[in-house]
Image (spheres, helix red, strand yellow):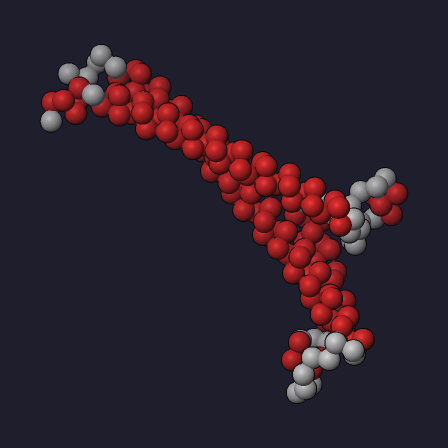
Length: 153
């Protein structure tokens, strides 16, 4: 037990280095994935929900708030076709040659794409926040370990 007490500073330092390393990994993953999603969304060039001046400047939907707004607009339009998928089918099956069925399915696909982007941006924000927390904790544990070095008997 005395050996553990004497080396507690070393344990804190090692855990601090590990936490710091994991924090860097989380930050890199969060930032990389967020940038990838923004780039992928820019390639789709969706402008739904943006004002005319933003569109004139070349802006497209490429962030969580913009995707949320566009998804809500698509949902509203889709529900104008039919309140629910069940109502659309009216007891029958999906007919890909029916323009109403096809428009509904396309709207549902676009809505899902936009809401999935919102969720993806949320996950990347959690990764970034967790990474920042791990960096702070890693520094704190490492500094505490170094401060205890030679003081624990």
